[in-house]
Length: 346
Image (cartoon, rainbow, N blue to C red; front, top):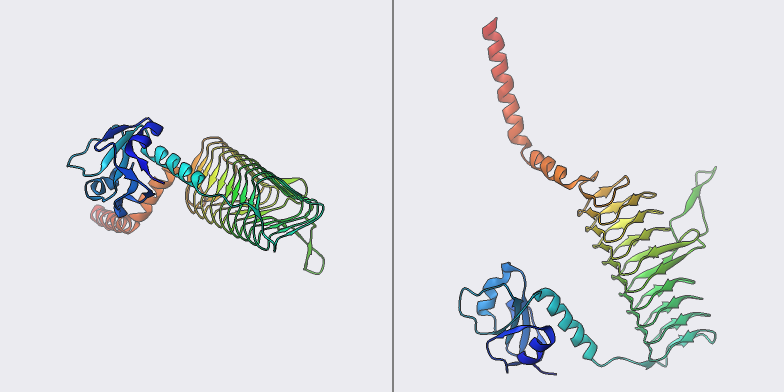
């Protein structure tokens, strides 16, 4: 499909600078622009590309003023990044949608499948499972006994949803994710061995959650491991048994939360960060990448490092750490001068 600058500007409430009739049919990064493509520039670091890109239309912030001639047509909006994301959503929505049940799929007689669903090749839907309207299950997805997938959710190839787990509406779960694997529960015995503690709880994922590829969310020992609505988990994230992740909290790749910890809403957890078990992290907390959180954090905390400390203090401490060789030389020099003064006084 083709869209003119005039059509795009009207949809975004933008101002056109250039040819209102120019059309685009695809998207491109501004540094890889080509004729017929739509790009955007929100970060000033990419400003130089605006003057050289071959993209036909570039979306920019309304406040931005070019310092050189621009050959592309500009559409000025209040939020270039947000508007570009909106256009991408519209583009995906216009793409043909898969429907129907593949002949190799296995759907149990007691399972319920809603209307306008896509059930791909070799999907297995077990006894008593419920699949809502408009759900897409790509090839090799497994939905276990009594599990539920809400309306409009998408499970990409290879996702496994264990028995009894619940997935809300409009969720997106990427390839290889495992929902409801056993929590890491073992008890040492008199022989020095470990006895497995049965994990009889579930995982409950609320609406509008997105879960990255190869992420694992363990079922609760009892009760539920809960991912609240709007949360976004990156690839390779580990959520242990009985954890609660709050609304609209985001977690970057390789981060992990140990058992029974509670993370508040609107938190940001950096990549490779770890949170120990049985603690609470307050709302709107920011945990820097590769940090280790070992104690409870109050609302609005910003921490970095291992052990994680207040972010400003960590930066100051890190600045000192980087200068340790110079500080060591200064201390040696001071010691030498002190010794000389002592000798003179004698």
